[in-house]
Length: 312
Ligand code: EPU
Image 1 (cartoon, helix red, strand yellow):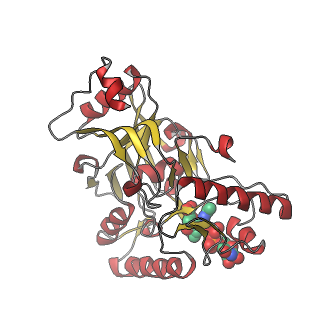
Image 2: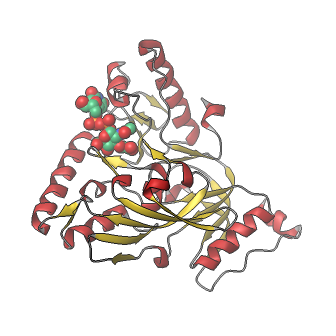
């Protein structure tokens, strides 16, 4: 399909020698769920000009864009995803600079685990909860990711992002619109870099101990099998995992998709789960929770290729 479009007269974007542009790129290996089909167009820009060139290409061929981080909060549909998927995986997006005064300047491609390790080494507190989240900074900013009672926007001082028209914007925290598991400015834009401020200073050893305690807690309550993290947002004042547990849905399966027996808000891939299996399981869980409690759970996981409202 992609080749036909090109053959009909669309020019591929011109990228730097290290920039990547491919057609029909398999996406499952780029997600933590290990599920889904292939992207019609796929790019790994290696500089700001590459990013602008691929965004311009998307506009030219009237194709929606999706910014892929580490694929940890994502369910990709089976078959072709009619998108240009852009991933900031080149080293140029993975830099961290110590601004010395308790602040860090970090690229959107930085892994949260690496960001936490960097902060630990420098005695910067407040980054500990990021260690076990298997995402990139860009993805965490888009979702305002959180764990252990903390979330990423508590650390943000300013954010640099590129809009779909290629315009670059820098906003301070007070100018951004964010809340539980969302940031409005990044709904249709690509986070490039953020200035983050530590909540305080402490000796590296005590911060490391806190990271280890979080790690131990997470291992005890969350599954290690392939998943996309929590499937649903928590309803106000309640826990989606607790509700799913109470309706007795742990261990329920559709194909190789299974509600984790450890935590009700996780669906794990037992090996060969398809996107359709997961969607059907989500439908069943949602219906049962609704019948039992009157609460309609809202998915937290991003569905790439379709809209949740069209499949649930
Ligand atoms: N619970 C049950 N049964 C279950 C799961 C949970 O009874 O199967 C109970 C727990 O015992 C606890 C309460 O529900 O009393 C809350 O559970 P938990 O501490 O696991 O937290 P959560 O609200 O389910 C949230 C985030 C997680 C984050 C954890 C830890 C959401 C949707 N989830 O989970 O984030 O890691 O807190 O801080 O906000 C994610 O967003 O992908 C994610 C995993």
